[in-house]
Image 1 (cartoon, rainbow, N blue to C red):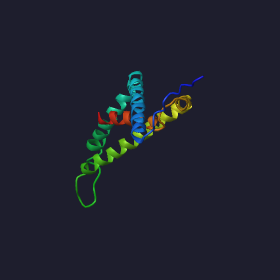
Image 2: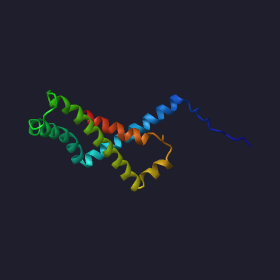
Image 3: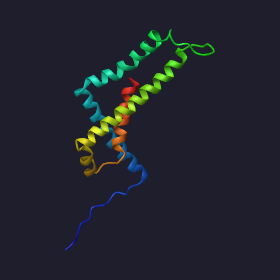
Amino acid sequence: MTVQSTPVARRTPVTRLRWALSDGFVLVGREFSRLRQEPGSLIAALIFPAVMVLLFGYVFGSAIRIPGGGDYRAYLMPGLFAMVTASSVVAVIERVAADVSRGLMSRFRSMPMSRVAVAFGHTASDMVGGLL
């Protein structure tokens, strides 16, 4: 009696990276399909920075004086970039926490997928939204 064995692919760093990227892009597609079901989150993510620029630039801009002179608006955009980045991090954390509470992470752990794919999927989809 002979036993046929299936060849096992070697796990080189390149194949692990390719596997992590392909799994991550599947989860990016999952996040984009979630945006189709919840378009309000995309609209809020696009409108929030514009509203903050208008609010702090034009409404509060004339009321704030900088010691030693200078233009307030020169400090406005870096501060808003930091604020949008921090709010994006919080949004990613909330989505991951929602996935954990629904038991999705347990299902992901039972699948043969890369461990970094979940973090990559959430972060990459948020970066694409941030570029918009």
